[in-house]
Length: 57
Length: 271
Image (cartoon, rainbow over all chains, first blue to last red; front, top):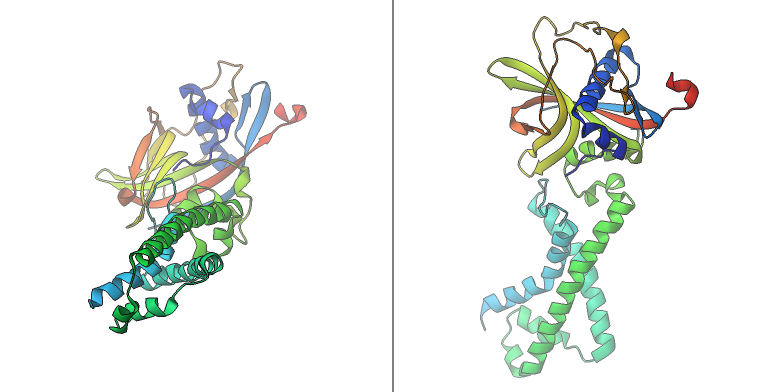
């Protein structure tokens, strides 16, 4: 089953360099608190964390 | 009379509920992804059976007005008096036609019920209506619609996953965007597909520590208008090339799931 993914994120992930940059931003944001930011079609977006769930086996 | 004939009639009468349940759980992947007891399944099949048969019987009674319930009863209890009634070919045909119609209606009712439940998110409110196991609700973002959870599943733009995996070289963390997941009936989850994955070792020295961000100042923007799209990040991470990175559930020790929503920035916030 497909996980939810916005059109903008999908577009970024189709580009290796941009996906690498975004994944790096997310890793850093977990420590700094600064949300990852990206630009698509002249508009800027931030990824805001809404919830975190941890699950073990 | 053969006792099996009575049993066959009972099965035919109960079958609409089973068909309804099968249709209700017939999702894109076409199989049940959670365990349930025989009693649960029986209960969840008997209730629809009663409803469908009552509706069907009422409709037939309204149209034909000569349904012989007594003969059906005698056949079910395998009573010899049923022979005296002289079961006609027409009765057998009408009974078979009735069952065929009821089975088709049951399938459609199950399908409609599933669509209504999904659209109105009734499976979140009522556990008895659940269509999948817990993993589906976590990975689809529907978990956020559960009472007391922050956020809304409709706002989820992407899901970031940190996966702790045991390997011969030690424990490794894979972090990436969740692309797909495959559920299974046995373990709940069969495998997950990640993209833009970064890998790092999870060593004892790092456990409990909170290493500083490497080069936070050079954090680059993912800018479609700019060539600058590489990021200096924690050196421990290795970016894994490839579109999909597949991790079987049996190798996963722990999962950390983070939900993100996309927020458009105003001009003054962009800088």
